Image 1 (cartoon, rainbow, N blue to C red):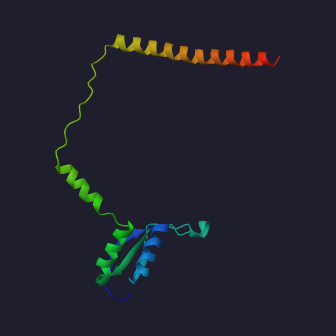
Image 2 (cartoon, rainbow, N blue to C red; image 1 turned 135 degrees about the vertical axis):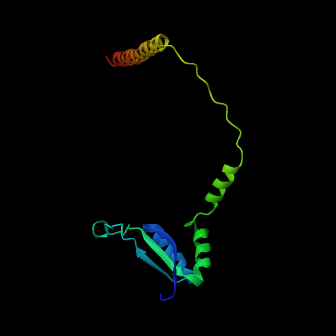
Image 3 (tube, helix red, strand yellow; image 1 turned 135 degrees about the horizontal axis):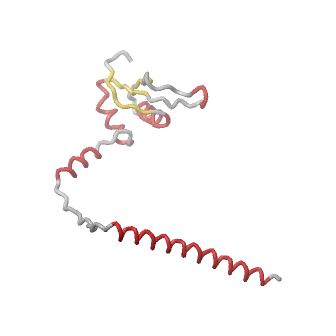
Length: 140
C-alpha cells in the first residue's frame, strides 16, 4: 500500500482477524502493524495476541469506518449516550440516613449479633447430628 494510510483502529487476536477479513471481503485494502510496546507469545501459544494497528487508504477510510461500526469493532453510540445522560438533570434518589450510634450501643449490637450467629451454627450442627442419628437407627 503506497497511498497515504490512515489509522482505523487497534485490535488483537480474533478481533484483528475479524476486522481484517471484513475489510478484505468488502474490497478495502488494509495493512496492520504490530505496536512496538506489545510482545507476542506466538512461539509459545501459536497464536499472535499482540495489539496491532490497522491502517486503510485515506480514500477508503469512510467506508472502512462505517463497516467497522456495522460489525461492532468501533462503538460510537456509547460516547453520545454518556454525554446526553450527563447533561440531563437526574432526580436525586432518596438516601438512607443512619443515626450515629453511641459506642456502648454499637458494642452491645456486636455482642448480640455474635451470640445469635453462634446459636444459628449450633442449631444447624445439632439438627444435622439428630438427623444422622435417626437415619443410623433405621439401619440397625
